[in-house]
Length: 195
Image (cartoon, rainbow, N blue to C red; front, side, top):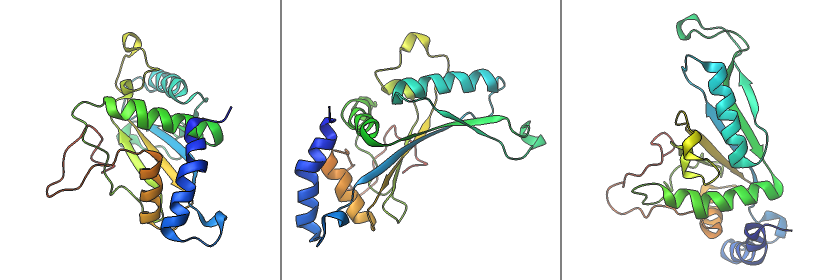
């Protein structure tokens, strides 16, 4: 069965983008190609246990088994050995990607305390958007009783758009709750690194 967000993209978003930007070919219409979720373990003393816990939680959130990212070099100041696990990464494509984005935009992000919208400026200049989440408990898959440490992670949405404006319009049409920029910048629970 096709995810609701994918159906919404095909039936509503793609025709609206084609009309707005006057694309000559259907293949020019921007689409979401993949979503990459990345979490660093940081300077946890029990890095191995932390890595297993973060991997389990990100696996629950995404529905896909994460990959461990390892240190390329040993750095004595950070008490880091070569080939030690320093992060967790998941790349979502296809139906899983659309299901995750729908849960993120419709369920998880609105539950952030004092939420006023995500930053509309977190684009990289090539049509890709990165969002920082400071607490994994905003996702309904995480049981609060079993959480031992708060884990933050970055969510990168990679699109086929050529410009940030096209990508911003694509995500807005898909339902991303962007902050309305009026005068001063509003604060939210989304990390300032991604803003």
